[in-house]
Amino acid sequence: MKKQILLIIGLVILLGCNQKAANEETHQPESPIDYSEIKNLLDSIHIEDQKHRVEGESIQEKYGLESDELRNHWMKIRKIDSSNLIAVEKILNTYGWLSSEQIGSKANSTLFLVIQHSNLETQEKYLPMMRQAVKEGKARSQSLALLEDRICIGKGELQVYGSQIGTDRETGDMYVLPLVEPEKVNERRAEVGLGPIEDYISHWGLEWNVDEYKRELPKWIDILEEGRR
Image 1 (cartoon, rainbow, N blue to C red):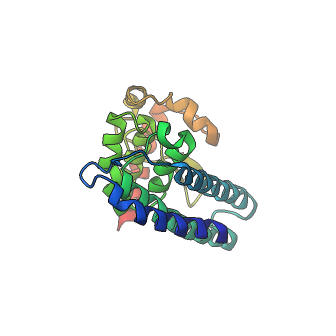
Image 2: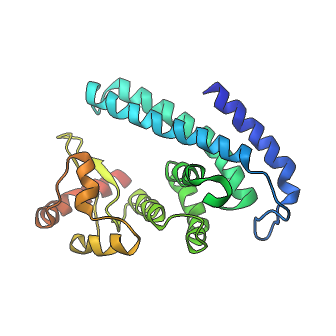
Image 3: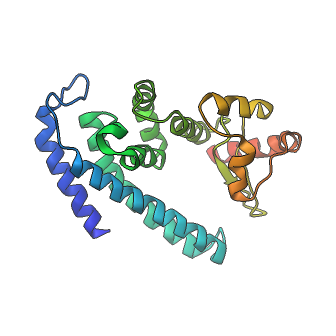
């Protein structure tokens, strides 16, 4: 963690020095730039981001959803996310959304991951930039769909692609968070390159039954709205 913070500080200094070399209007460098340091940092951030979330799943299984162990672990994750966001915002604000060709596929996906794991205000701030990046082939439409779903849920609205999964606090059961027109979800997922929702939710041991989901939907909507009050 300390090593990563030092890397982030170093990158912020580096980007500060290179700020004048960036075109302020398009956020694109005027001359060729060596992105290797940015790539290496983003690759490192990717590992940290995923590692601690995987650990969280094991802690939840062992100690439970409401355990002190899990709460403490998520406090650690939020601190890491905050540090990661400093670096990613500096990159985005200086160069725009760097493509896989410029920094590699893992580093490119890290830009999305860090924004996805930030607060609602930050997600909404960079949503237009990511939409433009998708149009330019610099970001994946599948990732954009996940960000849009995350923002919808964060605003207390129904998600579109069914990518966001919740946990029932009473039963501990997982479920697809409130979804608009559940019967058409696979049509919408296909439009952005996502596979069927049946395959997606199977990773959490869930099965998709649209009729049953629609019966439960009012309950899930009530829970979502209560969380926004």
